Length: 338
Ligand SMILES: Cc1cc2nc3c(=O)[nH]c(=O)nc-3n(C[C@H](O)[C@H](O)[C@H](O)COP(=O)(O)OP(=O)(O)OC[C@H]3O[C@@H](n4cnc5c(N)ncnc54)[C@H](O)[C@@H]3O)c2cc1C
Image (tube, rainbow, N blue to C red; front, side, top):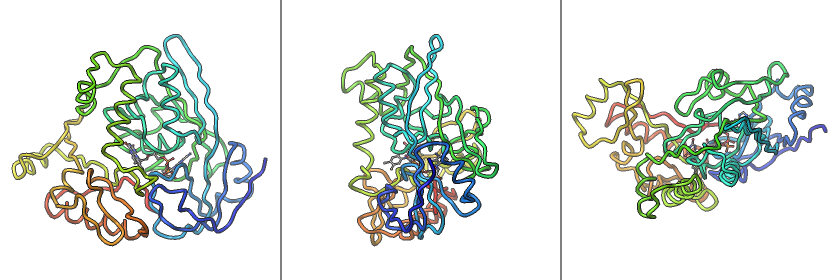
């Protein structure tokens, strides 16, 4: 099929922050085999960046290399007794896949309804929301090795999944281009409504025996209430990860701030709510120039209208600094900076 290289392409519509930067070269991939053509052309020996929906990226400068935009489509399901092995191509929209599953009664994705972005990016930061993480239902993925020019299969145990992290975001960052992902789902429901906001909303709706459709609808409703819609307010969701601290450090902070919000981790460490920490530093709703902190959720940084990537980045640095000064906790950015 070959590849079509475009030049000097505006990235504004390709990132949910709506940042105006330009890519020197831009290639859209609609079939996995085109990656072999790109490899043969020597493109992966130069600077390149794989792009899905651009919902976890902040561009802070023009991209002087090749943007590889993944737009491969297709979904197929393979049922083995009570289990569904659902394979989706990397360019499928994540939320469309969630609703495909709800409509077919495939259980497992419903708590992650309305997360923006593509299937191909879903393993990269082990997406998660409302009590579920991708690693819970990820079976395998096919990824193109841009160093060796071959396709490889990664099974769950190969991916080094942890909270908002995987081998694709850390050890092998940028090396592999994921072309399809297989999820292991179930035909019998195992509803996860333990997350506070979900159970409260179910109660309000007087739903005592929720279906996966109820969960997907409730999660979507809560998300719309809390998060800005990138089509009207540029953002990339949570800008920071929730920091994880040792039990010892937690005790020290909790003595000073008894009302602090926290979650126990299975390994004995404690996860703190980054949004709460930021709020305590009085950042919620603040605006500096064209960059701001979302009024309903301090974890989310926003583009007021015409922010540069650097304005957003500088705001994030100020927040990291203030949280560190007050709590001695170093926030890490969840969003990929380029
Ligand atoms: C309003 C809003 C709410 C959000 N809520 C959540 C949430 O609840 N939970 C959550 O986890 N995330 C959330 N996010 C972040 C984002 O939606 C996810 O990280 C999503 O998986 C990013 O998908 P994408 O296709 O847009 O990736 P991109 O932003 O295009 O890319 C993200 C990273 O993945 C890499 N990448 C993309 N595609 C591929 C591929 N095919 N192969 C290899 N690498 C690839 C990129 O190089 C980049 O490093 C939210 C974002 C927004 C805007």
